[in-house]
Amino acid sequence: MNDTRRLIAVAVFSLIVLLFNIILFPMTEINNPSEGFTKLDLRSSYDLNYVMKLFGTIGTEGRLHYLYFLVADTIYIYAYFMLSWHVIIFLQRNIGKLGVLTAFLRFSAIPAILFDIFENINTLLLLLNFPEITDKMVSRGSVASMLKWYCVSGLVLIVISYTFYLLLRQLFWILRNKTNIIQPTKNT
Image (tube, rainbow, N blue to C red; front, side):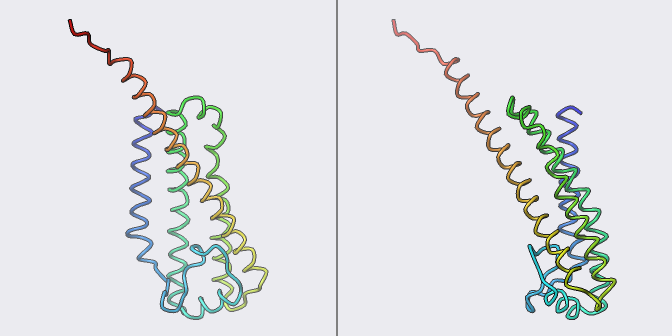
């Protein structure tokens, strides 16, 4: 895939991710800031007491909305994977030898999506088994959430680092070529 097509893919998946965050996720909102509750997906960790209070507070209708959110989030996982995949490959192709040496990092989104999928499956099981939820079930989901957020943080760090390196590389290239173009003039 050439750079133009890759940029089109980045634009399309960026738009999809944006639409999810602006339209779909607010439609399935169950967060209750006044009560201090947020979706399990948005927390880095949680315990049985938190899950029981959250599911009890949002009630049956809230748990149904949560199921809709899980469906949307599972599709979102694919969108953010494809976005990060195309962004990382585009940056790697434009940063020279560093991109070649670190080509393996294009796969860095895979652990994040695997933990995210596992987290969604576990949350689905928690919702379906409520109120008969065990501490072990909650602990698995909490660990998956924590690992997902570590992986996503690493992914963001990779993209920021590549972008910074690309900008510096372009700046140095411009400065190097500018000094070669400018010739001192002689006054005769």
